[in-house]
Image (tube, rainbow, N blue to C red; front, side):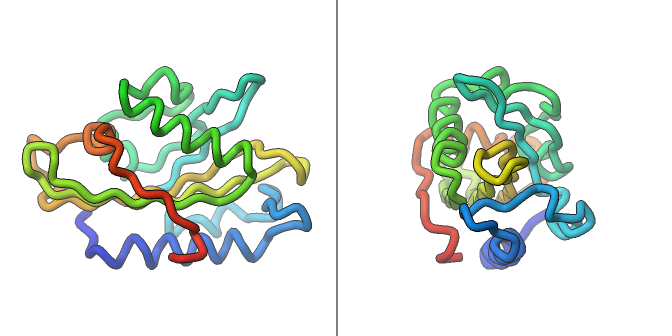
Length: 175
């Protein structure tokens, strides 16, 4: 699905507002304070990632259909460190680790035409959720990728685009 450059920001802004409306005193949203139907507008672009163990690992619990399309495969049930390719693995795992460690939402944007001169934009929002109100148990990641030609046979996956490290982090409040 091709989106205008403004559409991802608007969609991420509304998801951030929903998440923000349910924050507890610790700045975390309890997963139990949401009804799953509330996420319907973002469902295809949402990934729910479980935060497990010590050291932390990130298990892909649910992956929306658009994210599967962007990735070129469905990695539901697998750990991120098993499915990400170098050098992007370090970049993406650091994003998840930062979100889990700080218990703060994070936003990222990326623009490139570095892969086969196909223009792409990637917008991501990381939202930490808690079961107990104090530690991050899940990270909801909403991801929108825009491609000049989203149905091109040689369209690369998002990992190919993000591999050059040109992702810019910013405060989700700026959405």
